[in-house]
Structure formats: C-alpha cells, structure tokens
Amino acid sequence: MEQATFSVIIPVYNNWELTAQCLRSLNACTQNFVYEVIVVDNASTDATVPCLDTLGKELFGEGFRSIHLPENRNFGPACNLGAQLSRAPFLFFLNNDTILTENWLPPLLEAFAKDACVTAVGPQLLYPNDTVQHVGVAFTTSRLVHIYSHFPRAHPAVGKMRRVQALTGAALLVARVAFFAAGGFYEGYRNGFEDVDLCLHMLMAGNILKCVPQSIIYHLESQTPGRNAHEHHNALLLRRRCGNMFHPDVHIHGVRDGFQAVVADNLDITLTLTPAVDAELFAQVQGQAPSCWSAVLSANPLWLEGRKYMADLAEKEGQYSLAIALRSEIATRSKCVKDFAHLLTLEQYATPAEKILFAEAKTMFESLTAQTCDLASIKRKLRDVRHWNDNLLTRLYEEKFTELQQRLKGGA
Image (cartoon, rainbow, N blue to C red; front, side, top):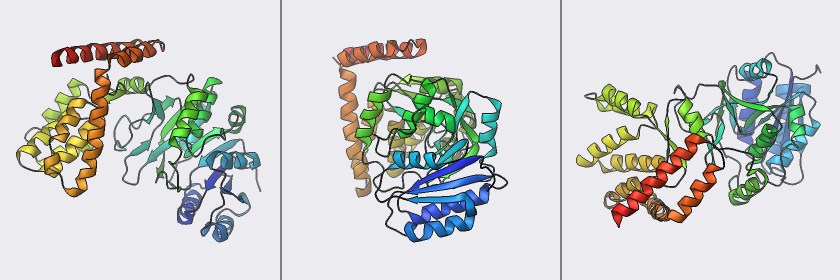
C-alpha cells in the first residue's frame, strides 16, 4: 500500500448502524487521497463484532485495520491505541456518529499548508437540522462552550475561520508529532474533556489551533451509551490539570463578530446583539407577516428583543404555548432573573408536557436570585477576573457589580 497521508482513527462502542454509516460516508467523500482507517472497538456487544471487518475491508481494502478490545477502555485510551498503531504524519480522530460531506478534507489540509505553526484543525460540525454544533470551543470565566451553538449554518459569524483554544475530538485533524509531544489524550478522563486537555497542552507548547468552517461534517452528538455519565469527574480533572492554561475568550470572539458581550445574572459572560443591530432588525420586520418574523428570528438566535416583542404579542392574543416557548428561549439565553420571573408567570397556562420546563425554570430562578444577592461572592468573582489582565472583561464585571449593588438598594 502507498504511504498514507493521514490515519483516520475511529473509537466505537456498539451503535453498529452509525459506524457503518460513518465508514460509508468517509469512503464516498474522501476520494483521491491515500489514507488508512483504524477502528478501535471498545468491546462492543452488537453487530459491530461480526460486521466491522467485512465492511471495512470492502470499503478500504488494505487501508483498513480493526482492533477488538476485550473490555471498554473509553475514548481516550482507544484513540491513543489507534494513534500508536498508525503510520501517517497526520491523525484524524473521528466519532462514529458523524457523516462526512463532499470536500470536507481539502480545507483542513490547506489550513496546515498556509501556516507551519498550525498543528491541529477542526471542521464545522452541524446537527442534522443544519444548525451549528461546533465551530470551535471557547471559554467564559467559569466554563467552556461551543461557540455559536445552534446558530444557522448560513449566519455570517459561523463561516469565519478562527484561531481557538480548543477543538472537539469528534472530528480533529492533528499533526502526529504534536499529538505525541502533548502526551496524547490523557487517560484519566472518562469520555469527556480529553480533547480540551490535549488542545490546551498543545497550545501551551506554542502550537496554533484553528476551526475551518469550510470543512463540514454532520454530527449526531453523544450517541455512545453513558456518554455524559462522568461529567462531574471530568470537569474536576480538567480544572486540576488545566485550570491555569486557558483564558476567557467568548467575549473576544463575540465582539470581533459584531456582537455585544455582557455579564448575565449568573455572573458569566453571554453575548447579545448591539442596539444598532436590534434597531435594524425591527425596521426590517415591522409591518411584515408572521412568517417574516419567524424567518428573521431563526436567522438571528441572539435577537432577544425580537423574541420579547413576539412573546408579548402571543400573551395578549392568548397563544400561551408560543409565549412559553419564546420566554423559555429568552431566559435560557439571557440567564437573567427578570426573564425567568416573567416565564414563571405563565405556569398557570402550561400543558402537562410543559410542567417539567417550569420545574427547571423555578430552580434556575432561585439560584440566580441567590447569586445576585450575594455581594461577597460577586466581589470575589471580580477579584478573580482581574488576574486575567483583560481590560474589557474587567470593565464588564465592574459594571455588573455596580448594577447589582443598585438593584439591591432599590429592593431594600
């Protein structure tokens, strides 16, 4: 077999139908490239065992290898094992719950070719409904987030290539040398945050990571059984190993893309539209049919003022299911006490199916109310924020502290 340019490493555990779909899409959409495929089976108990080797050889011939482990070793160890057995200079880690599209590979390779300091790149990952799952991982002051999650793929902010601090391991192309220099995937995690840990260690070594949205892959996301069972363990481990390696950058991405960064009542950074864009959108839809409003709302997930206007209208007309849906979306995005309070006023109109939503809203409302009344914890947060030496970030938190002080005085 001719020397492979890259090795595709796919860890699997059951879900044979997804694996077969992934392999077929990889074969169909990766023509004219020499590569090898290594599937590491974490002790599957379904049709993966009798069917994997047959389909793999049928699709990829000598370029296919499989490893059937006697026990489930989880994502990180399985990927590391595949990497150790690989023979190519680039490693492409791929989840089995993905579907590749035409031309997914050339934009990723081009990003490497244009900048020798780039050692890891990731594609744009989409949900099946064509909204964004991943265009890079960013950080707030307290958590990590997928930038522009659930935005429509056509949104201008989505299509920008961007340097990021972390990329998802669901579809990650990385230089072999950089991967092993960073220690590979740390095996103490249990199916979560291995990718972020790896990226941060590569970043600390001076490498550049980029998300390349011109490369598109569909991701069904978290189809592996028990995928989220160890989130608390993984989060604590990530903070212990990498707590000093990242810096908040959601606000940086947002401002660069024309949004406005604010501190929500949960004392975390969130993004909103600027007043100027708000006004432009209202001018665009005033007097238009409801279908026009719906289209503009769908195209602009952060247009909360437009959603509030439609929610007010729905309440006046007794369309309470629509009002509840809009108010829930507003509160979830804004993380503001007043938005959750307004949502809770609609509980009397909720259907039995909507009651769960209100139970969650009550919990969030109580938590946010307690946070905004605890000035001591807010002062600690402001002190912690200052150590990042980020003028914009500090200003945002100072303004929030002043706002909350005034709110407490007004309520006294």
